[in-house]
Amino acid sequence: MLLLHKKTSLSSSSEPKLSTAAQGPTSSFKFQRSPSAVQIMPLLLTLILAICTGLGFLESPPRVRLVGGPHRCEGRVEVERNGQWGTVCDDGWDLQDVTVVCRELGCGAAKKSPTGTQYGPLAQKDQSVLTQNVNCNGMEDTLAQCEQDEDVFNCAHEEDAGASCEKPESSSSTDPDSSFSMVQEVPFFLVPDRVRLASGSGHCMGRVEVEHKGQWSTVCKTGWNLQAAKVLCRQLGCGKALVAQRHCNETTQGQRSIWMSKMACLGQEATLQNCDSGPLKRNSCTHHDDTWVECEGAFDLRLVGGDKFCSGRLEVLHKNEWGTVCDDSWGEQEDQVVCKQLGCGKPLVSSSRTRKRYGPGAGLIWLDDVHCSGKEESLYQCKHRLWGYHDCVHKEDVSVTCSE
Image 1 (cartoon, rainbow, N blue to C red):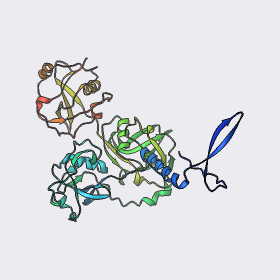
Image 2 (tube, helix red, strand yellow):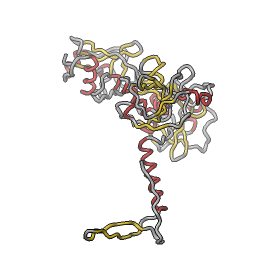
Image 3 (cartoon, rainbow, N blue to C red):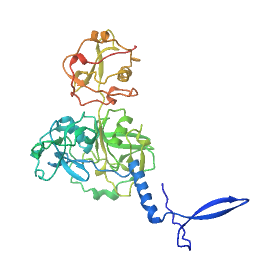
Image 4 (tube, helix red, strand yellow):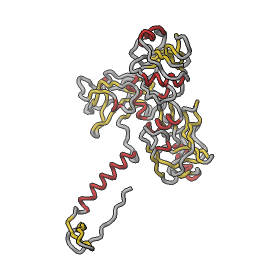
């Protein structure tokens, strides 16, 4: 916290700066000129702004938007650069790129990658096409993190990219102001004992709730973004964060008190309790503003083709179908997580001959580019590409041999 104090003016026409020089048992004082308040204040304001931005108290809006669609989660893709909005060329545009846009906007899963020309009114001729050849792997948090060319060549607005996401915000008719004074508010400084996701289809999806001394409260949307959702998903033992929606529809709104805290997570914290938080104004939230988060749920895995339960070709279960995992980026840390999840001890280094003995799989290849730190308890907590997206054949299927 920075505190600014007014300096007491002296009768001199210049502002003195006090310095000391010791002389015997007493000290004498020497006055020097110092910068004026006019010079100091801009520097202090810049410092305060930098500190607040670094801590996440001042939120920056997404640098992408969807225009011309039936709701904010579908439309022609536009990005902002130097204060100007422009379109995205659809060269190389696919569902993985749409996935990142949907994630950045808090719009749920990607549905399709339509042409942007189907959303009117069409882009003005004087509006620039700002980027092309976007190449996301589907794991980025923002479109700006994806590979792309900002030097656009031979791409007109007839090739503008579009995006359609699965879960637009509800157009609930509930008046957010109608219940301001009717909801009990819990002060932000009361650190919650537990957190959970409620009213979803499983423990990895739902309305965010926190508990303090046996009382559960919903959480106001202010400050919630994908970074906060990442922390919550990690804390609950779920997979990667998919949705951080700052709104609940009528059927999923809470009925309890509201925890009046503005979250400021960096995304690396172990628990929500480790994130910075600040107070909200009274009567600034209703249950219309309850936070909704969706994480990737748990999935089963198995090792097949080996002579025991703890060795073989790795297969994972998704949508009730077993499929293999491509070995791109796969290493010892990923082996550790598989062995840990199966309760099979530690991984053993397998020779290529041993891996070939398990044989290639058949059917679906579910996962590719899996990245683990080795500290995860389950494979679903590791990063990976979208389900079913890969550039592999079955001779690249992962095999794992564990010590037990």
